[in-house]
Amino acid sequence: MDLKLGEIADVLEALIVVGEEKKDDLEIERAGAADMMSDVLAFAKPGMLLITGLNTAQVVRTASIVGIGALVIVRKKQIPESTIEAARLFGIPLLHSPLAMYTACGRLYERKMKDIKSL
Amino acid sequence: MKATVDKLIDQMQLLFKDLLARDIMISNVITISSDRTMEQAKELMRLKKISGLPVVDDGKLVGLVSIEDIIKALENREIQQPLEKHMSKRLKVISPDANLPKIFEQFTRHGFGRFPVVDKANNLLGIITKEDILRSILEEFRVLYVRDKRMSDVLDGEALNRSLITGEEINKSGADFVFPIDYTEISLSGIGAARLKDFLLNKKDIPEDIVRKIAIATYEAETNVVIHSGNVGTIYCFVHEDYVRIRIEDHGKGISDVEIAMTEGFSTATDQIREMGFGAGMGLPNIQRYSDKMVIVSEVDKGVVLEMQFYKKNSD
Image (cartoon, rainbow over all chains, first blue to last red; front, top):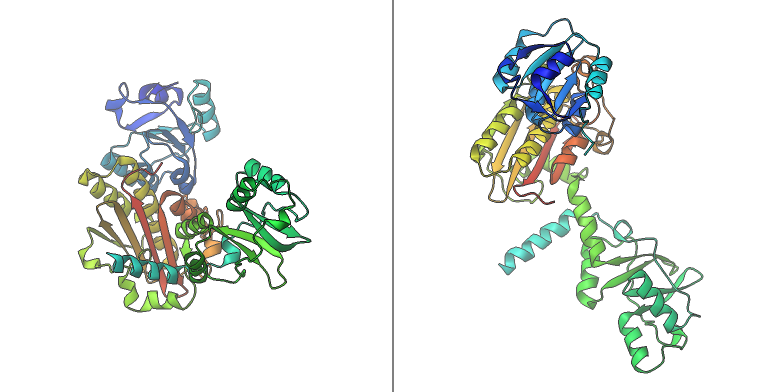
């Protein structure tokens, strides 16, 4: 099921660091989780939600290359300023969730969000 | 025009001269033994949808039944007869070590649709049709890596100014997009690919999904330079009418075995790089996945030249 950016933030107890203005407009259909950027490059679908434990600017750049709809950084205590800058620059909504990746994925799965492979 | 085509074929043959009959042939061949009838051969050919059937006794090739032979037997009402009387016995065969130019010569000279591949003792090893040749050339095009003498030519000499894919001259100073790769800062990797993506999107005539493929493959290649080469590199992009060509060159450590580097999961990256989410051993396989054509040439301590081609229209 498609979820609005704001709903995703609620479900994941996340702060919308970048893209607050899109919280009621942006709807996302699919989600996937990865810490390996090459996996993201290999399998990501345009417009999807990417859940990752990495918090470098690199993640945002990778997200921009594959056309990620929004990015959730989980578990990390802090997100470096350079990462937030990059998200602003590329216009990619960035969420910061305190949940562990397993829990974050589980909550979205409960809300019937699709993965990258399902039809 | 004719001269250009001939020249191109010559170049191609040179490019694929290491492709041998044993690599091209289909080895699980459907055969029939000579004590069967033409009727049985006809049925087998019909069921298996094949136009030529090798006749084999004890592994040795003794003849070939073609559709033409079947038609003749039908016309003469001899279809019930043993096929030994009707099969072609004077066969043109190809040795497993014949290279592509030799195979081409056979096809042109005799005009047959297929050639059996046999060893010196006349054992049937496989069969080659024109489609098999086309298929192996296309496969070869997907990943072509050159590790013989031509390699040092490419990385040293003026061949550096030629396309690895087509052999045509490349004027790098006339590239539509150039980006110098800074290898000193791992966190900067990907900026070149991001700029290239913007550049291509602004051109407006390339579909977004194609731009995405180009950006992903370039990102992987750029990251490879940053992580592995330990030296400066450059991204060049040439936008042509039907396709986009990307060339990424560095003068670093090089790759000692391209075949192993192409294997999914193989990586020599350090822990620090893995912590950044790279070094999963997916770089070259991803580049192959997203590009329509890819050639990589490398020699240890001389660097890597990677060339990719992307069609502007979706092929599928």
